[in-house]
Image (cartoon, rainbow, N blue to C red):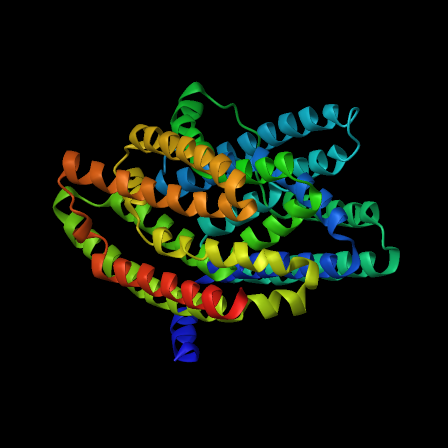
Length: 419
């Protein structure tokens, strides 16, 4: 059953999704290698550095990608110039902080060179060259895995790993500059204005993951941070499916006429139900095997990470309720922003309370609850203000049964097999 559904899933994936799968899969492999060579405290330090770098870049890169697919007003050169401007400014700011903490050197250089991957991705998406994107991903991420793995095994030095990591990003930057033509253009206020609400929305919507990491680091120690981050790291296939479908929904609704909206929503409901069935099936299997797998793959110190991982698998249901994508497609960026602000506040509040009572597991539970509350608020707004019922774009019985199945499996596992 699982093999058949996985084959259906592979059939659904396009060039962009295959690229994303290779990218996420390579990242998981790298962190497996690092966990087998370095102590859990050293892994915690690395996670903290990456936490800073990703927090500084994630929201504006996501906003640019969404804006690029959603609008045809601006050229590729506008986005390239904006990325280079922001990444340089952010990198210099972090590097200045390295005078107080040398660990920020890696974070600053990462912020400077990492966004070039987004430029490559956007260029090939715009040119509809999915094969080029796949070939690039195989070559680049294959080289990254090989170089970082060999460096880690031969040197047993975190700084050597950081140097190798940055070196690969520099090579990608050179490739981008040489291979892909773009000219620096003057960025007008209208360009910044059209991006501002998207950036703010993604900043608020995605901050919870990073705030949770900073909160765990502040309240506990680097060992707990490493365990939490290894458990909270999502399976690539879920993220790829949700993100690809979300981008498709946003683009389809933005370009559809009013009389065709119900037809698009029906397709959203059908596709999201397909993806949800596959994701929940995989999640049930993962819950059953996560504890021994974490112990075998990462080591006994990461057994606690599997508990966080199991809790975070509940997010998979909420991810396939695409009320937020519909709002973005309708151009209601400000409403999305206000609702995500409320979700962020709820998440932080619940995370603090959860951390007090249940440690890092409470932080994971708070994330699941807050994310579901956000989806409910978005769906309520669409229904009351736009007369778009949740039943138009999501199968309520599927969602209810999915939560019931996942919670039942978790209850059985932790009642009879773990404790």
